[in-house]
Amino acid sequence: MLSQWIQKQLEQCAGNVINRLGAASAEPATVLLEQPPNADFGDYSSNIAMQLAKKLRKAPMVIAGLITAEFQRIGAAGGIVQRIEIANPGFINLYINWQEWAGQTFKLPQGSGEKVIIEHTSVNPNKSLHIGHLRNSCIGDALVRILRKTGYNVEVHNYVDDLGNQLADTVVGLLRVPLAGEHVRFGDYCWDIYAAVNKKYAEQPEMIRQRTEILHELEEGHGNTAWLGQLAAERIVREHVAEMRSFGIEYDLLVWESSIVQEGFWSSASGLLKETDMFVQETEGKLAGCWILKQPAGEGMESGSEDHQKDKVLVRSNGILTYTAKDIAYHLWKFGLLDKDFNYSEFNAGLWTTGLTGAPQSFGEADRVVNVIDYRQEYPQAMVKQALEVLGFTAQAEKLHHVSYGVVSLSPASAAGLGIDTSDGKSSYAMSGRQGIGVKVADLVRLMESSIEAARSDATGLSSRLIATAAIRYYLLRFNLGTEIVFDFKQATEISGNTGVYLMYTYARAGRVLSKAEDPAELTAVPRFPAQLDTAELALLRQLSTWEDTLYTAGRELTPNTICSYAHTLASLFNNFYSSCPILKGEESSIRFRLWLTLRFQSTLGEVLEVLGLPKPERM
Image 1 (cartoon, rainbow, N blue to C red):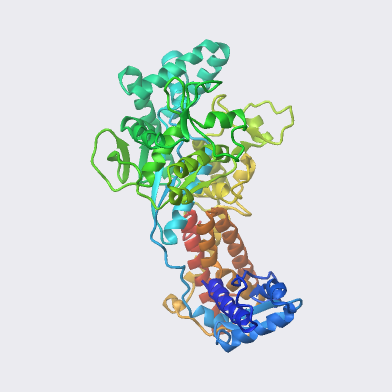
Image 2 (image 1 turned 180 degrees about the vertical axis):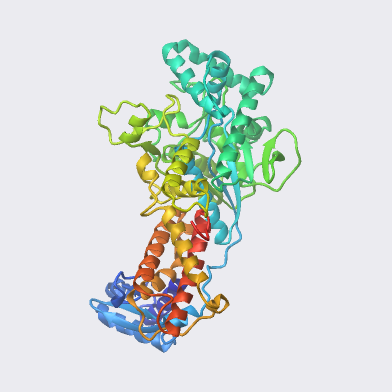
């Protein structure tokens, strides 16, 4: 990576200067680089001299001069770095020799080869998917692609909570609530059943006890109710998996919560926890009879909210395991810390599932675990990490990462379109499966597909459906993870601006230009660069040079939106270059250079689209 190479050179030079000034005891210099918006101030710039001024007791300009001289002495200047300058009050500005850069191959740091388990989607198997679920899946799948691209061995899990309240409610509805209507998919029927049974609970509170009865029967795993629950869950999961596949999202393993219970994972996990003094059974108060994970002294969790008090419960007083208990057992298995394993069988081609029958497979035993779960699950995720620490597995606790993200809510216009009363003037409205309020993924795809079909003048390229799924995927990825997405039908169906359609169109535009080259085979050879680069050419080159750094940062920080920001800027700079610099007209040397630059752009954007899970169209 270009910036990493420059950073190492500057750190070496700064270290040499520190030693020469007799300040070897000072902390090693850590160089931070930035790419100035204005190329007149360098292609890269560092303020390391100002950082060292206090420690070395010299003016920043003096220190910058010493570092620059050292940079030239060790021979770092004159190659890729064409020149290095100093600017007040002590900036070190570096200018790249782009001809030299073009002839180099910059690779990501050698991947560790660590095995990473990424768990995402993990939707309750009780109804069809809505767009909030889809944000989770898109984030998770992008992280899978990013980490695989950066050298990790990634295993993808989809956790199926087939013993939870939501499935129990759907089963209650199937057994107790008559419902008729037009439904194409079972998941859509259960969407309405789930809303109907929760309406019944509100009208007849005594019905709620049926949920507890069903939960017991589901957990026991035998009898009519358990079979009905399993059949309903499996049918809905098959619909979920098929729907995700249409977005290019795949899994390696479906982990069923019932498998964790029936294989005795919790029994092994609780045995380990009972050897510590942090797992105890309460004898008094609201939690009497419950097994809880005590909180470390000084963390202030004991006096936390009522929800947090409930979250620390691992086994309820009636003997039912909480989600957190099963999650702790699951994570001990993920890291290879349990003396148990699942049986595995194929769910469909290439996708495995846990169960009571099957054969051994090499799943689990991860070096790192990444869980994509919305911010509302932050505390239960912290409990899993705490359990690992309590058991002495601190290294594994440090390698457990919760990728938190903001939920998807509805704009007032979209909410009103679904029949929600918006007279209270809220800026957004939460989706609620219990009330049947939400936007099904299938409905959104159909809406987007219709919008794209109506706007197209040429339908010979990608299908409108494929464009629709790509556009939705990008829309859900481009926001900062912590941002709540206020979903609006009109905004989501736009096909211009910072959208997936814009990126794919730009990729296809570059392809059309390249198809007009007289000898496409010659384009891969690096041509002679012009003595003076056009402003648009230089801006595009500067953005291209940061791709490896952007990808590496997104993988380290687990932020796919970083890739989206890079992609939109790259596409915008190419379109500016396309408009201001005639590519196929002018002198032969200019044509060759600009065609090469177009090819380099398309190759880079192609990698970006692959990482984001978007197609690379020859034409739109």
